[in-house]
Length: 259
Image 1 (cartoon, rainbow, N blue to C red):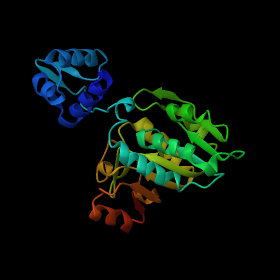
Image 2: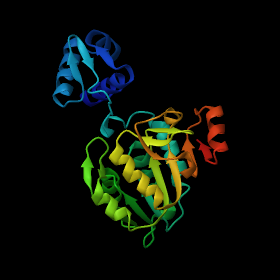
Image 3: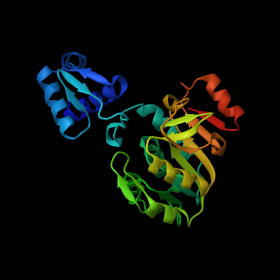
Image 4: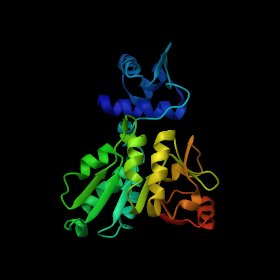
């Protein structure tokens, strides 16, 4: 197992359990205890965990796994969701994409659509996510509009009043939201309030709002609210979503697509 793969596994286990012991996780990952101790020390130097006697705990009270370590989580579900979301986009539309692993997959799915290979432009993409803009900038058929703002390292998203200034002057056809949580009562939410504020403004500028979220996000709550569930037109999720919960979203007026 490569170091990057180990680090992804360690951080995911840490987020899930809150605490890890060296010997236990070494056996689970089939590597030496010396390797795990070294990994913990290096991750602690990057302030991604806190070392303890014999193990490690999550860093801080509220912990958010950085985007670069989330990419392997529920990858197949996210790719299916992304293809379905991309299918909701019509040629020539202006589409807003927030940051996140699922919306990054949506950007890739849009780039793969043959009917969007040409146009002037085939699509206008508005995003505050640096990684999405970077991937799509090489597509000459796409017009890429990037908001200003201050980069947030965990999600590669631009946040703050500079981003507000750009979004306040545009109108888009469709906003695609990547969320940390989506609940019928509490709506869509993110971990960071500044990130949630930009996503909320993107929703307000859109003719319709699509939430792209795997089933693990449904029925969950997070710190910063993006919008009420009534503001969401369509939810695209995976087939593992609880049927009763799907029914509650549909009763609230949300079209639910499961893939």
